[in-house]
Image (cartoon, rainbow, N blue to C red; front, top):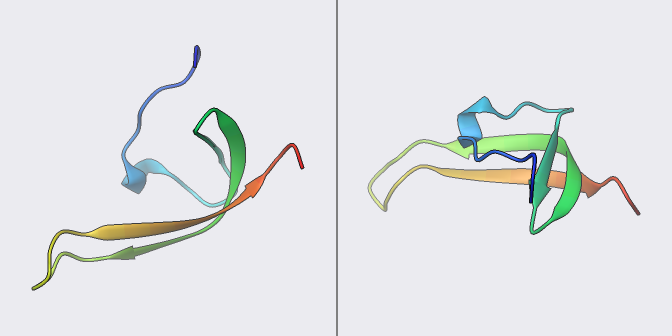
Length: 52
């Protein structure tokens, strides 16, 4: 999609917007876990579509 850039999860903030699969979403919440015994760090985003 023109006009979009890839960014790291750590740069995202609640209330901002992101594009996933060519759909625009507002970020409602972000939860992150640190790397541990069972693999790398993980992040979970709660998103709301801005078009529906």
